[in-house]
Image (tube, rainbow, N blue to C red; front, side, top):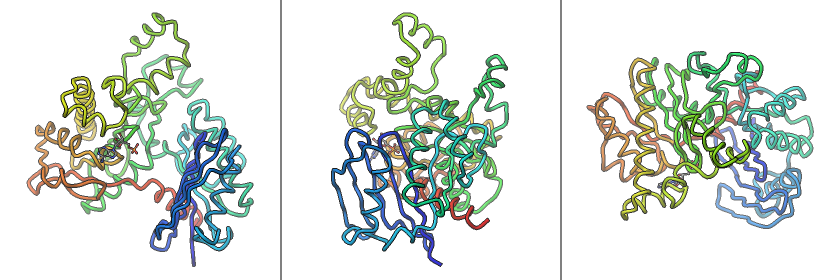
Length: 399
Ligand code: AMP
């Protein structure tokens, strides 16, 4: 039987999609609609290389759906004859809070709960709901829809890892605690790493390093800790996000500069991180180039980020009682030999040894970097979040 799953990642002004044929797990077409609201633009590409790009008015997510569905079914750029060929839809959802511990089928209550969790993810969850509603409007309610949460892989963290040492009533009243993020990516790469090693009981540190950065400790397939917190702001410094900062520094600056919570949030999320330290860019490529050309702040930004990555790997090795493997993924983890090389060399105390030539020459490919005598194995595993969403969707259909 033909099974084609549509994977949707709806943001506030953009909507990414992939249509995956689950027989062979092949991507048939993918694309992005952006500038939803004030404008509208679609970029669509098929597996056989046909490309379509156009400005199309998209006042809401509904018109974005219409635009890519007609590309998908049209004569010139189509990959299916009609929408009836879509078996089911899987949606990426950023925040599942304490409610959603695993992926599930969509119904009205699920939509309401995702909407209510928008308090914890105001930039994401409301947009996901717009995506789900636009999808129902376009495909009708006969096509099953599934939601897959970035937080659910972290639902296995024990309270000692997820609690904040704040007055307890804030946990009971507002569910303020660590939820983590990038869970679908950590789940995929840790599972793939275990498959490649071919053993159970592994202690794996997964490093998802991209514009957003997070690291997880995965013991025997179960996440026991992660660096992101209540929101994807905690932990490592990122492209424009600060990562963990002494809370007093934030209070002090709000007081000194007369900043509102919204203004401070904007600074921490959009004007901090590598962008703020380097003064060059939020993009790892520009920062590396500037650092190697002698820019001291760019070099400091690299040093800070690498140092933080190493510290968390060390901390998580202790949390798991040892370390069997490290995985690099995300735009930086998959492509930046500089970051992987520096981090692995500084982990010499764990005996980590990698093949430098292989590291320098590898970009965006699944490969083992560690040498045969390294007690800790090191892998690059390109992440496959959309495929995981499609697999979860298919699995729920079969239940
Ligand atoms: P992501 O958010 O996963 O798309 O990752 C974006 C980050 O990956 C940016 O900081 C990019 O600079 C970085 N990146 C992408 N390609 C490369 C590359 N070839 N070398 C170094 N960094 C890269």
